[in-house]
Image (tube, rainbow, N blue to C red; front, side):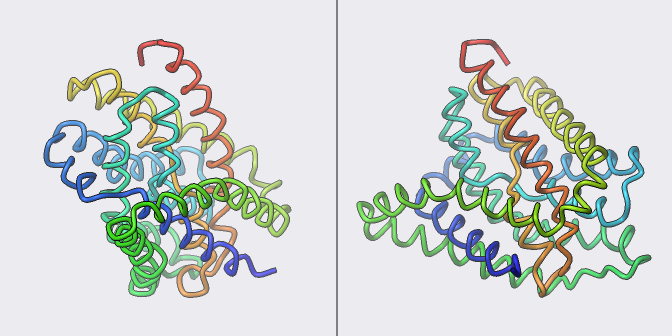
Length: 284
């Protein structure tokens, strides 16, 4: 089974569903919440990929796994982070705004960061990044579905809500099915690298949480904002990373997606523990 025929439709539907939940005010809120938005964007888009590179260097990961780890660090978590923020009693409006803005900005930051990463790591083993292809794939599978979702919500809000209720229930099972397909297809490589990548993913995620808390205290953010920033910086979009790694138009190598699969596993475990702690009123 060619996984690209699974992951691209799943990613497109997830982005369409994200668009169904967005409104103009979600983008405008960015102008009113300067400090918290800067903290979130700085953590998500700049510092997390740098930490991923550092972790890969410390653990001496192979070029393929280094590219994969940096790739998952470049892909913010999408609408799942909004759900986690709500469960953690965080600032849901801020979470939605950060999701909206990062989903647009990363259309362009991912090609830039991955071009630099591939040039330094992958070209020695014959891995090249067709930047134009990646940009076009991002536009088709992410930007256009988000725009369509926003348009439908603007014109037919009731219909958008009904569609969102259905798609949001299908999202998690679809992602689990995608992960299962990748585990089956790459079980030998996963088994070979699981211990090292498990450590790498855990280091990256714990560093992301520490980084987010540090930024929040530097910017003197409130408790609800801190919880949201931690989740936004820590949660990554495995479907997007898998789509880029396995696409025949981009890397065309499913092995690059393995760090994303393992990170997604560790992410859900650790962030659910975090949500459980802070939702009971613990200050973090």
